[in-house]
Length: 68
Image 1: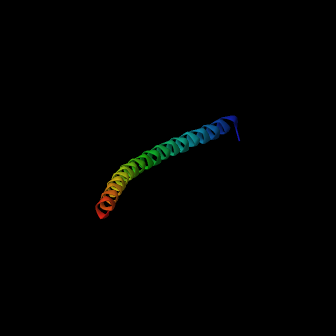
Image 2: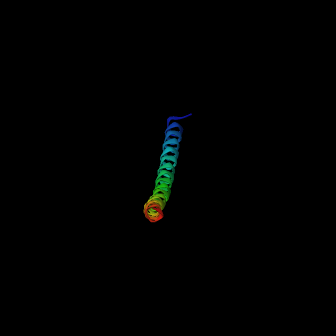
Image 3: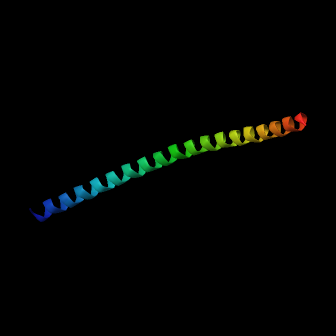
């Protein structure tokens, strides 16, 4: 292998590594955004459930007071 061929092979390897790195970065960012959207939906659901739980506790305590 001549020095010129060796340089081209190294350059091709480096270009390939940069492309793979770029694709991995894009995939990681996409996955991160997808997980963040899922987290936000779960937070909204948690807040709704906590509100329902508080309302049910109030209902239960009022019914207990009426039974006395």
